[in-house]
Image 1 (cartoon, rainbow, N blue to C red):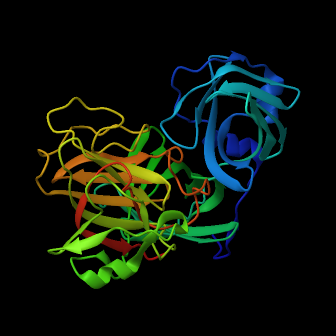
Image 2: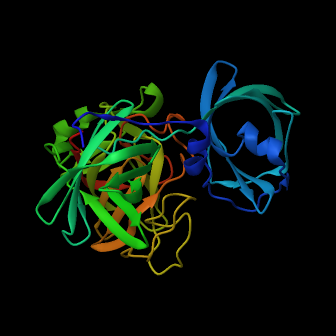
Length: 395
């Protein structure tokens, strides 16, 4: 085998392997023929709505389930829900959601149209969510069964497979988004990258590989010092800033004030340690990259729910409710790589490398694959934070 870099084959047909999965809740759809599938309406769409002089994010997900198109929608706030009267014909999509009738025209990876109700019309543009994936690094396969080392440079990928003291260059490489195919000494492997975890299949063998991740220096966004307030600003630049540090604790006031975000907006893949205290009936949240809310709420003793403490709001439920009673200090230890999320709540693993399929209500924008800030919700109730410490991944 040569040492030359193997060029990746990319294509639209391959992309459909990774574009389909979305969260579906109480959707209404219609029969989907081959033309609809070929046109590519299925997938996840990051939407920007323009209303007057302002813009805000929304989200649309479309899947083909048993030959029928089903759609879910997220508006400016709230959770993911169903649509009504969803149709896709002649490259035109239409549906009802959030009190409006939405129509849009599909052009490749863009949807563009209007949404109307009795109060008027707004414009919207949807961009297909295409994962930004970097599979570079050293991957330990199984229980040190083998080591897969990958180097990715734009549209090119190369690598080696080391096992039993023998190192071999991988060949016949094909990458389709998160999906990877290659051969080692004629044996075929198929893999899918999920953040820092890779699931590999070969001749019936199922293997799990984990990337050897290197981390940068911790960033103390808040660590009990009054000067740590300089790391934060009000969301939207409102100018009002009621948050203060009292006895080493960051708090927002009696009945909720403004949401705040970090002045740094360059966080993409990271670990995040948060110590918080929620009062009785309190409600807050930590937005990762400013777009994905890990909910904070007074949830002790309550059933697991989409709006409960530890949930990725309206999208992913925690495995267990690990909440402590209101008024007690609690911890989150979060890892967010690409759009795969691990959360440890008060020492209990409640999410284990689960995929977050899109933004949540209240997001700063719909650019989900871009770096962003950490954003603390402060407009619902009083909330207390004792530590917010972020450790960026080395890319």
